Length: 168
Image (cartoon, rainbow, N blue to C red; front, top):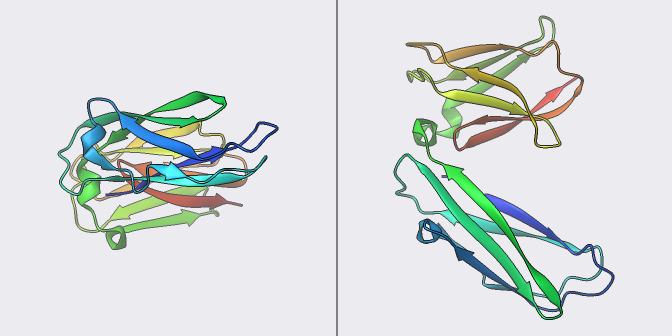
């Protein structure tokens, strides 16, 4: 399972004081929150919070709310959805991504597994999905035309598996 990371940034004009974290929602018990309190954040300071999914999650969507509370400021919450699909059973060593700049194509190979109908998204640095694709029937390989994408850094996401793509 892939851990989820949420970044907390103090955009205010004073330190936050100690912050309390809580997970709620119907899937809250599907995750572990390693710490329930984080130390005060100075102005402009940030920290990452990691949510760890349980190892035995069934294939479906899990939804939780992460709430951050502290003295002297309004609590903040974020809704998080975590989707478990067949790709979560794939060892990261089985996934190979080959950017081919000559023909502006991205080739994804997933070992000798049949990834029929597995969805693939390419996401830009703003979090916007710029390409949706899907493995063809009876295939462990997918070719995606990326010629229309500008140079930059992207995330390739298949279910719970994510990796970075740099297009030059």
